[in-house]
Image (spheres, helix red, strand yellow):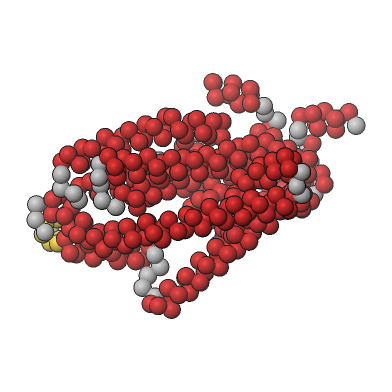
Length: 362
């Protein structure tokens, strides 16, 4: 009894025996293998779970403040979210979609102008081969179509559209269920674990709760802030064409660490060079530098706080591994998964935060 008490105090009794350790390792490996064939089916549940996680504090506040039952408060929050989503959809249809169509139509000419400005003509000889602007533009278009799924015709496009619609409806429906029955579902997930492991799982979940909340909310705030700041700089200040679409793309690229910043800089550089004005190029370069300083040094640290405790190299590695193994699902779960692994290993090794700090100092 005394040994068990000591082990409980150290937080390691749940994995005290080799059989339990091997059993847990096999269960985790089986879950990871099962997640691969189900990676597309899990995407709506992951997105809905993240949104419900952010909206749950509002549901709990309404329940306490107005003494509403949970399903009433959840319904009110769900209707509010649908209203905001409808407004966002109307704005995309009225503002973003026409600008995106215009940008798509003018993209070949923009690429041609960049090629001519860089090469000095619409033909260049490189490594013994003749390259033309038309050939480069055609190859770029073929690559984009291949990444989008190829040229399967109307039938394949219709099938993809129906799949996207089904995914959207499933996400919205699951979001509603998570809002209404979040605590019940959490208890059900905990019940799936063996009794001897439940205290440890509950401890890991309690440790991860503030991290996950700040990460999801922080990601939404950082992306939104980047979109707004990008639109202000590219539109009213620099008067760059298609500022709305470019701002949205720059904001969405913030989801990817390091790579997203480089990709957004290249995107803005291409848009600036296509204008053919050295003043616009310098202005966009200065704006890109200022945007990175504001986002990386002010907004992101202020919003994320300790939620960004993972080393940037570890975050980038998690994104690459997640995307390679599980595609979109891996991207969504990369940072939460890496943080969860870190918390589990700290409990397994019986380390505290002071231990980790001393180790880092060494």
